[in-house]
Image 1 (cartoon, rainbow, N blue to C red):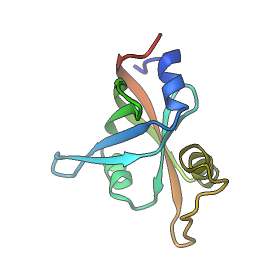
Image 2 (image 1 turned 30 degrees about the horizontal axis):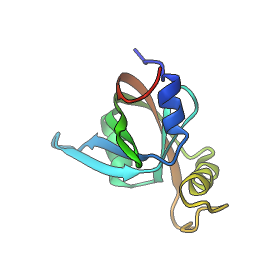
Image 3 (image 1 turned 180 degrees about the vertical axis):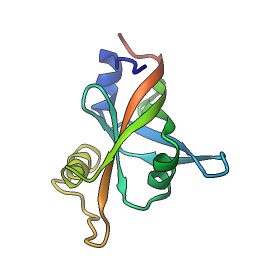
Length: 135
């Protein structure tokens, strides 16, 4: 059952916070990647490229874990277990441009490559643990 994202966690997700996404490899071992993150208010949204290891992993097994950490205060953190409910190309280029603005203060993502298809991974949080985040 999806868990509601608290106002304090929403605030952190809207900041240029560090985010680590853990997925499961075919043999069940963990794979972790630092990523940019945003939210639609209900889901955690990660942008990647089609064919990346994390995208392959979530297609096979939708269970993931996410840590979101304030880069100025490591004790302001949310740890999430959830499930990927959608992987889509719809709006993914616009999303990476928004994330470039958030994280790099660039109007568009400076590393666009025409040979790479962007995707958005949509995660429904099922268990959220927080430290230092107001409700």
